[in-house]
Amino acid sequence: MGKINREDMLELTRRMTLKRNCFSRIAGAYLDEDGFVDGTFNKHFQKLSSKDQQRNLDIAKAVPFSDTNTELQEYVFREADKKPGSTWQLLMALKECGLKNDAMLDAFYEMFGEKYRSGGSYAIYFFYGSYDVPLKAKDKESLWESEEVYSFLICVVCPVSGDYEPGEPECGFLFPAFKDRSGDDGRMNVFQAKDGGWHTNILEVI
Image 1 (cartoon, one colour):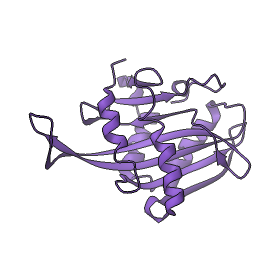
Image 2 (spheres, one colour):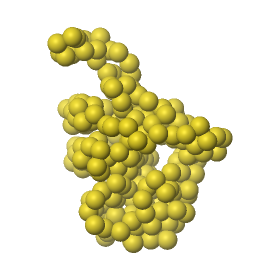
Image 3 (spheres, one colour):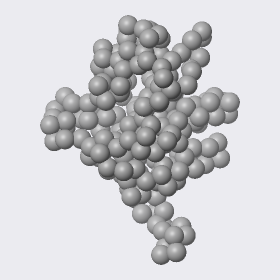
Image 4 (cartoon, one colour):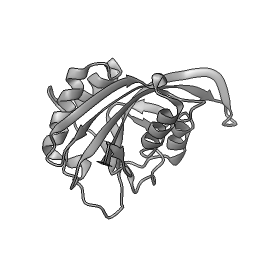
């Protein structure tokens, strides 16, 4: 596994505020302790109330803002991981459609629920975002021109209680990885909370 640059992650989180929001869509599912889906949602992010936007931004930021190279690590996909029907192929398709295909999302939830165990009910939150990565001058100051548009998915898994109230994030990922201020489809940044709680390692699922 390679190293993740903390500055890359902080650059992304600065676009995860109410005033500088990079997300256009949020989708997800609620699953019981046996991995069966209890319900799903798929909404335009900007149509959420300010309160709900902030709550979900806090969930999404848990991945890039986690402890770099300890809780958040880089995973490199092998060529064998990219075969037809693979999780990588499904994630690429979900990124390309901007989370607007419910059938593909349902396929991911079903696959995830079959393998993941959390010790209780949990939710899968998916965020689709895009970021116009600005060019950097030699003195590291940003220029106005955009170097590339980085489109990405953030997935976060949280335990839920009561009326689907989310607890602290357990695990998740950023796909494609954001490396050297650019998207890398051959890698993902994987988040695993080191909180002492029991849950399946997300790399055993994806």
